[in-house]
Length: 154
Image 1 (cartoon, rainbow, N blue to C red):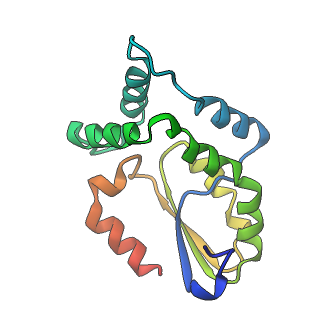
Image 2 (tube, rainbow, N blue to C red; image 1 turned 90 degrees about the horizontal axis):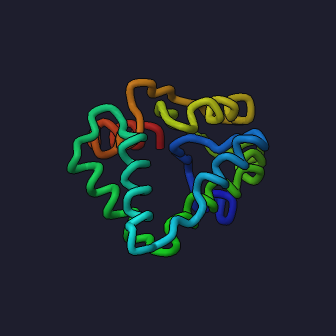
């Protein structure tokens, strides 16, 4: 939205930045490949294993079950969102370097923590907020704090 219609955007708050090395790009691309839907339940067990593996601090089983249900709603297109995010990395670098808008990047403790820090020198008018105590599911675990942090940086 900010690139397509910059006049309609005042400022931007992002969760993480995908400033990836070629090896990281390949790793994420390989990780988010379609998981077959079969009688053995491969898709379901793989999704659940990934949710449990990446359980953030404070995430309850109920929160993880909701995350699992949301993943299932993606059906055969589940991986598309991840591929889109990781395919956009070069454009993201360009956007961070050229947009005049104030850009705030929230950096929770997750798979993108290190590559998000690489965005710092690219920001013309912005900052990275380190959130080492937050991980996956942080918006579920701390919804009020998350909303306040976003609102205070818009």
